[in-house]
Length: 92
Image (cartoon, rainbow, N blue to C red):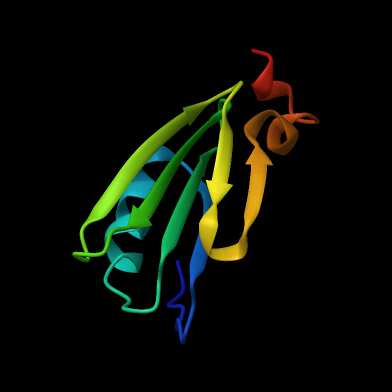
């Protein structure tokens, strides 16, 4: 795993294993400019969506297959089933 520099980043999307995502989440949430952090599971239709709160704490929302992700920092709505629609893991 290489080192990545984040400068004025407002959102990070990470796809990986559960352990990998936990480690990356811990690393990424310390950046002051980061407003949202999204981790996507490789093996199933699942996302963890972290949003920075006004007091700098992080709110976690877990999204399953039929859910939708509201990415406020880029004003976008992303249905989770669209992310996984061409992947076999989404239906297994």
